[in-house]
Image (cartoon, rainbow, N blue to C red; front, side, top):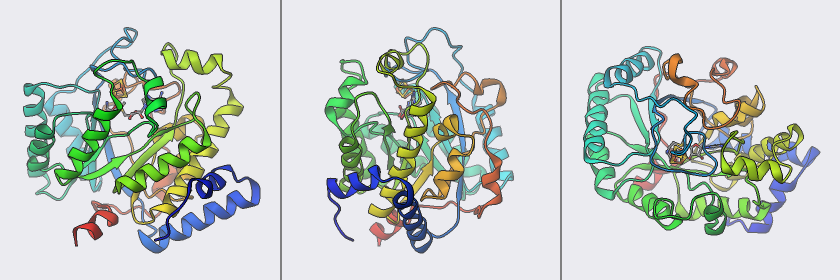
Length: 344
Ligand code: SAM
Ligand code: SF4
């Protein structure tokens, strides 16, 4: 596989009009030739908005006192998993704010074991529970979780610092180390970035793609940054002229180009069509599928808590079911082809 330079990726991210359509067509063609035409479903369960962190962009950050905090019970989580299983989902994703304690480690371990048992091991289990110790990751892996999503948010240490508080809970090096620990534990590792952050340049994004390539990731979930009212980053972004309809459309188009470029650089990985795309355009996720994404994650959390997992403004509460009219691979786990090839 050819090595790509920052300049080549920059060109992909800056193209417009006919050249952009050609980029999307090339990515779609490559997707079909490598991972196939199928779309894999992951049932997303956002089981708690309690978080110890204070990321400057996120609506469920610790210091946001305006939201009602919730945590689903084990039974509510397992009921949702059973629903997903009955509906033909091949995998579920357990996502939440970041928490760290022995009790929590044991709770997740037990839940993963119960999910494994209820589907006879057939249901894929992805976790997205932030930074944990290598030992915790190992226990959850042994319990049956086999994929983990941990976005680097930005591969630029400097930009990372500008979008997080400057304290020991929010260190770029720790996030980076956590990604290595996940790979060492044998997970299919997914990472990703936010696109359209204040102060982010096209070259930052081109380097994000090379970072993912360098890390040899198996999956990616990246989406547009979307302002969340009341968060420090949103105030900064609005002050710099961000967040207008026009600017959000640019972020959407840049995200689609990022997806296409990543498909071209890493043809055999799984790429998710992020929910945040749909916050900007009702067709956002569908458009991502048409330029390289092959995974969608419909939100299955109980309706009464969905609005409280408010990461950003206009977060969609329902899934655009037009995607389900596409080539959806019901009942298949849809493991990363890239990961399978590495294992051989
Ligand atoms: N707490 C875990 C973590 O941070 O890895 C998992 C849950 S966290 C809510 C999942 C992702 O939401 C983050 O990785 C971040 O990229 C995304 N997110 C948070 N706030 C966002 C915003 N304002 N716009 C777009 N994405 C956002
Ligand atoms: Fe917590 Fe994740 Fe939001 Fe950061 S992005 S505040 S870790 S939920």
